[in-house]
Length: 262
Image (cartoon, rainbow, N blue to C red):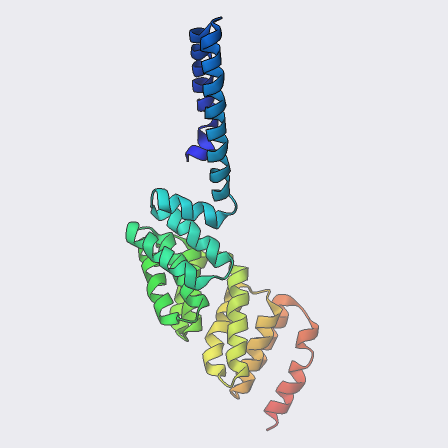
């Protein structure tokens, strides 16, 4: 704080000191020699201190570590943690997030950051716990709610994920982005032999973004995978009605005819 915000206020103090000393020395040669020598010593000392202080501003990590050493705070611990996370230094970042949470347990952002860290390191159950804590502290935060949905998706808690994603959209998250995520996850499940699990995700994607052609196509394919030819045919009709004819739909009619003929 002092490094950044005291330059201008210190100008007045420096001018006041200079004028006072100058007035005291006056025209007396002895006093002027004393003042000159003292000024040289003070300037040399300040120069050395400045060189040392500049070292703390080498990079963000050095600065935050110095700030914590001088006066620990949740703000600096959190800043240091997120800076380390940006460099994928998750193991080093974790203790600083834990320290930030200890100092400010009601700050949702620290729980959210820790949830992100835990998710990035594959500790999904722990990530879910921190994400839930963040949601409890900031239930109106769209970003926190969306991430809770992402964690639930990765844990295979699909109903929880859909609920969280729907709430995130109501809070202001872009429906188009959420639809794309749900469509990708639903299609992946279907591709791995789990069309029944993928269907609700793709259906929600279509609901959130009716113009998402790939989600429309995936829904038809998922229904076909389950042998539900009539529903697949109706879904294709609705897709063409909603989005018009697209190359993605060209082979579906033929596949449906083959399915009906079995």
